[in-house]
Structure formats: structure tokens, C-alpha cells
Amino acid sequence: MNITEKKALLAEFEKFLDVQMENKITVRRETVIDTDKYEVGDIIDFTLTTGEKVSAMAMRQEEDGMLFVFIDCLKDEYSMNETNINEGGYEECDLRRKLNTVILSTFPGTLKDRMKPVYKEDKLRLLTATEVFGEDSEYDYKEDNGIQLEPMKERKNRIAFQGKGTDEWEWYWLQNTVKDSAADFASVYDSGDAYYDGASFAYGVRPAFKI
Image (tube, rainbow, N blue to C red; front, side):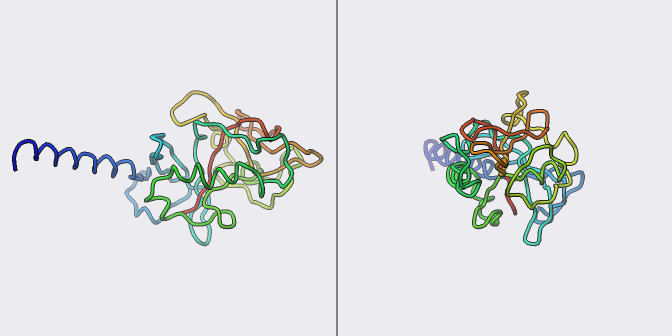
């Protein structure tokens, strides 16, 4: 094998390592664990195919897996619907479709292969107002039979930034529509408080998924 062939082989090997690192999913905890046995509070770090680095926290153990939620919003903002209406609710909103097409397509294959349905057949979803705030919200939200997630009882876990590693607090969407409103969906204010706004506004997204 001549020097040119050796360099070409080395370049191919470096590309292979780069792909492996992009697909790598790490778990942060004080002790080393089996990554299939998560506990509430565990944090996993991974990189989207866009190059965006993200982290997600284990929020609730369910029968078929652990529910994870992004710690921060994606760097790109999205509207719930292109037009300022909430007819059809989360079930028929544009953002639900984008979550499970455009956004899901950016997840590393090693993670997508392990993800379980988290809302009907969907692999990604938004949280509900009750999951974030409990039952004591000052707003009259619809479509919610959830239970507050234990980490969300702390305000710091309700606050999110616009992209990991930034210093910009972000508003982000929830599933619920607002009663007596034809336009509004529930959201989380940048200070971690409950709020709402028109469906066409561009806000942050904190995907939830199950593995």
C-alpha cells in the first residue's frame, strides 16, 4: 500500500469516526449505568443531523419506556399553525406534523430506532399544560388529562433557552388550546409561568419522546 492509498484509507476511517460521534448518545449521572435503565433526572446528550447539540431530561417512567423532554428549545422557532386559528387543536395543528416529519428527521438514527410512540403513532410530541404546571393554572386550558411531571415542579425545569448553550430565555408551545378562544394555544412564558398566544406566532419547541 503506497502513501496515497494509506492517506485515503485514513481519511475514510476519520469520516467513519465522525459519523459515530454524531450518533453517540451519552448519559449524565454520577455513577456509570446501563443506558437502557434510566432514572428520572438523567440527562442524555446527543447531536442532531443538522449539527445542533441538544440535551434531554428523563421526566417520567411509563409502562413501555422513559419519557424524555428537551431541556432547552430547539434553536429554530415554529408556529402552531400558519394561520391564526386553533380549530382542530393539537390533533390537527401544523406543528404536530412538523414534529414528526421535519424535526424527527434530524434525530440520529441510533436514537430513532429506540423511540416508542409517545402520542398515538407519533414519536415526538409537545407537553401539556398539566404536565408542566399541574392543575393550578390560572388559564382555562382545554384537552388535558395529564399529570404534572415531577421535575416540572421546580421552576428551573420549566424555563428553557432558545437553543442549548445560549443566554436567550425562550417562550415555548404546549398542546392545549384556550377555552373561548378561536386562535390561542397554551405556552410557557420565558420565566417559566403559564401563558398563551395566537397560533401563528413563532415560539420555541421542546420535543418530548420516549425510549
